[in-house]
Image (cartoon, rainbow, N blue to C red; front, side, top):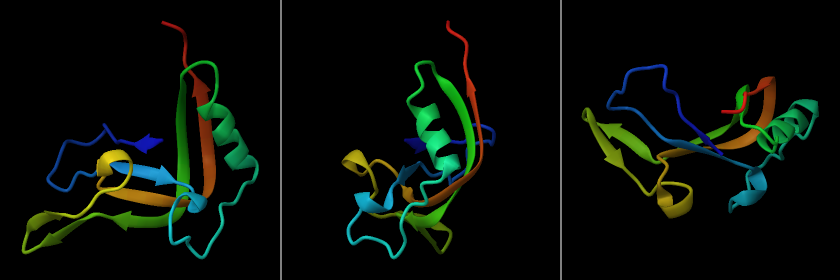
Length: 105
């Protein structure tokens, strides 16, 4: 799963962010994923037979791999496969979920 926001114009602080579950990282965080109705709906939408537009609020811990020092962007070791993402959200809870299956092309 990844997050990208195409609504804003690109800026020097743009980041690619990956979302991970607490059990996918080491050391494990001091919280567990809340697997309530909203999370179940998210999982259902992610594995729907048709492409699905998903909007949701993710609550969790944000781990950046990029810092800004003296107005300069400094890249650290990234997250995800091949360390391609500049940050990650360790998911705690999902809320305000809207999932809309898209039409077939």
